Amino acid sequence: MSEADGLRQRRPLRPQVVTDDDGQAPEAKDGSSFSGRVFRVTFLMLAVSLTVPLLGAMMLLESPIDPQPLSFKEPPLLLGVLHPNTKLRQAERLFENQLIGPESIAHIGETRDDEPVCGRPLGIRAGPNGTLFVADAYKGLFEVNPWKREVKLLLSSETPIEGKKMSFVNDLTVTQDGRKIYFTDSSSKWQRRDYLLLVMEGTDDGRLLEYDTVTREVKVLLDQLRFPNGVQLSPAEDFVLVAETTMARIRRVYVSGLMKGGADLFVENMPGFPDNIRPSSFGGYWVGMSTIRPNPGFSMLDFLSERPWIKRMIFKLFSQETVMKFVPRYSLVLELSDSGAFRRSLHDPDGLVAAYVSEVHEHDGHLYVGSFRSPFLCRLSLQAV
Image 1 (cartoon, rainbow, N blue to C red):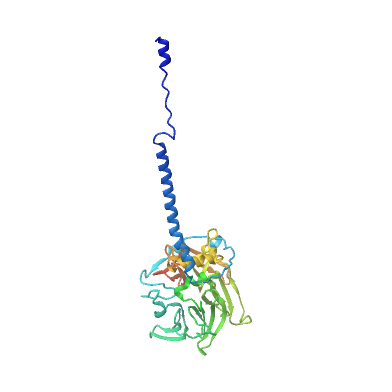
Image 2: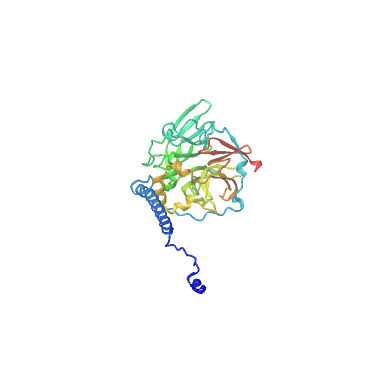
């Protein structure tokens, strides 16, 4: 065989190309696909196991509230006198961890379940004879002599007023002579311990009432209110202001003079949900708020007000205490002029010092800030702000 024939027989080795169809590749591909299928099936099973009970609960469980849609205007912009600040954080805490929800008066040694039995004082005013007039959420109206430690029941909450019981006696204001007491009954359905359900349902069964301490007669001055809360008599005693908390506004009801029996809006579309109203040394009024309607920002209560189905679902699944944890804490105190204009504002974003503000009482150059949940009072020097 010649050298040329030998070269022809020795062909060059060509490199082998391994494709996906050769060797171990099919096993790797099948394994990857199998793992993906397992993940998808597991995820789907997990989603179904969570969704089915949730849907079942939503279908079968009853909601404790039957809310109706409410409509609000866009909240006022937090500009000018409403511009956010931290002035409330300059307050000092008093009697910390010695009080429980001192809205207007300290109430010690009580749990939520004990309230209907023990009572829950909310509004307190000084009378002309050194006595105190007290509104108890569960028991009614009282006159208390702190010097003699005597307590007199003026009006029991068990007494029906025009055919309706009083389930949530809230705040009161008294004429200078002590003859007339104007007070709010926030609801004939909900009690104080269920105030969040009252707000979320938007129940309109609240009333402003008048009690005559001499004749013991009771009159309904205004009804169909949504969570009537704090009340304040004007310096001339010709009208009474009442905070309608759910609607973020303050109503005015005339109780004497040419406009007696009439009513109008004193302030509407407030930047928060008003609680108690108290006089200011400048001739206006202090209003405490524990929750605001931020603008710019997102107001959860405004959002939910037009979506009652979401509120029903929330309270099917969660307790009031759980829901409260998702309500942003932002304390706001407003000073209003005698005509209802915003005069100034004091803020504590996130409620770091003054939390869950319910009332602001001015005395001797200081503001005493009450709360419906916090275990303390706050005191703020007006000179400091």
